[in-house]
Amino acid sequence: MAAVKQFITLKARLYPNKAQAELFEKTFGCCRYIWNRMLADQQRFYLETDAHFIPTPAKYKKEAPFLTEVDNQALIQEHNKLSQAFRMLYQRICLILFKRRNDADVALVKDKKKTNEHYQNISPQEQTPTETTGSGILPNQH
Image (tube, rainbow, N blue to C red):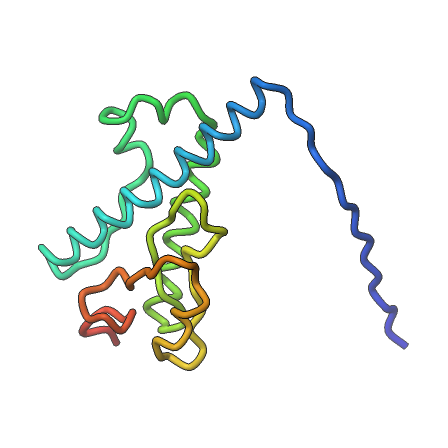
């Protein structure tokens, strides 16, 4: 007989001091910035060359020196999440949206029915898909 797995969950609340809270705000802001810049650059690159490429966060540090103030791992994680989002997009599983400050993590929206019905549940503000076709799927995908 197979053993039953049992998981224990711990719930913790953090009370950061002023410096830690400021670092959190900077990190979240930089992650939002890097996501939106990489997404915009990927879209522009795709429209110009009809090929896919997502630049790394290191490319943006010269033009945005405030990115050096936060942990590099957080920025790399945003790059990894965007790469994963595009892999899911190519498999026609989800849409990729720009991030906004007050939205929860709605940058990836699963689209199980492959229609636009899910837009009503994203956020109070209307968001449009990042692709030019309006359907959330890039043209000429295999």
